[in-house]
Amino acid sequence: MNTVEAEIAFALENLGFSPALIKRRIMEVAAVLDLSDCLQQATSTLSGGQKQKVVLASVLAWEPEILLLDEPTSQLDPMAAEQILNSIRRLNEDSGLTVILAEQRLERCFHLADRVLVMKNGGIVCDEQSLDKLSHWAMKNEPSCLPPVARLFAGFAFSKIPVSIKEGRGVLRSLAPQFDFPLSFPTASPGCGNKLDAEKSFAQPVVEVEKIWFRYPEGKEVLKDISFNLKAGEFAVLMGPNGAGKSTILKNLNGLLRPGRGKIKICGRDSKGVPVAELATTLAYLSQNPDDYLFLPSVREEVKFSRQHLAVKDDIDGRSEQVLQRFGLSQLAKLNPRDLSSGERQRVALAAVMAANPRILLLDEPTRGLDSRHKEELGRFLQQMQAEGVAILMVSHDVEFVAEYAGKVIFIADGSLLCSGSKYDMLSSSTFYSPQVSKLFRGIAQGIVTLKQAQKLLQRILHQRAQQP
Image (cartoon, rainbow, N blue to C red; front, side, top):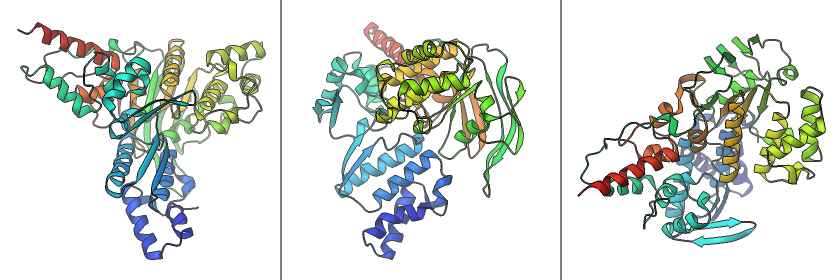
């Protein structure tokens, strides 16, 4: 439907609900999902995360008995995701709603589950109601099935494994009851995480954004006086609420949109008037929807197309095979991209845009739909690109991924740049945009953002406890 309100009302009207009840249901779900201010807004103008909330609202409004959710928070910021999952949990507890949830970002929902089923190769390999028993099974068989807090404690062979941050902090206090928190451990150094971090001395900026403003036709200002630089070999992430303008920044950088005021320089050149096709030889862009990139009958042809039209004419077949191998797509090369899973299509689209060896890579929610193993592969690949001097600017709500692999975080809200800096400063000091291990050790040690840092600190706590009489 054309507007948010009409979209939510559509199913209710077709089910024969009265106008008064329809209005009440719309009011309730709009308030729960923070959509009240955009009920009259055109659905086509919403961000990807806002669209996800509207679809969920249209389903929840008619109060089904069974709710099937396939990664319902994949495009939502942490606060919106927590709000939605808590609302679904309340419906489950108060109204008897049965919820079956397929999710990759386990840190958001693992502790809410009454029962967990683990699938592999088309079959169920574990079906467990006890999260503690599941955690022990997972550490032996499939560690990626655990969120960071559970994985941290399970790695040290605790008999009872905490699955929530609250439980984890309780365990920490039981380990050191004789100490006054915070413990006297030195602040974790960034060197425990990504070596290619924001403290590195980078070269000259390859992207310079100077006081840009942007508004859509007949709309309010979406970007307001945005300024930042991106240097060769830097890995920066744009974070902030849904609808803050993050994706709009990427589209202004690659020329799909043009700022109303301000200036953007790409590799020292003012991008004003430069055709999008010309920018694409230097700057690769992967949007939220990988299906927009896939139109040829095979994965191999998708990669070859990019090299033929964007890269210097060379051994196209040989180079394309290298790209396929690099992204783990060789076995899928003959398949039609539209027959692949969402995560596989994401990798194909990324391989296609990277086929031209760009100097700058723009990514919009690249971890959406990826499982733990493919996230790790993507993270290692991006760090490799970073080491080779490629500048990376990514939009993401995946706090755990950002904490493990990025170097710099830029917070955007309501079209304005709030702050930016090292991920160790930005994420460890944030209330909601923090990885689980940061929340676990808050008040105990500063700058903890990666699982490796948390493991070293927990080991130190256990060692110190062992030294006590």
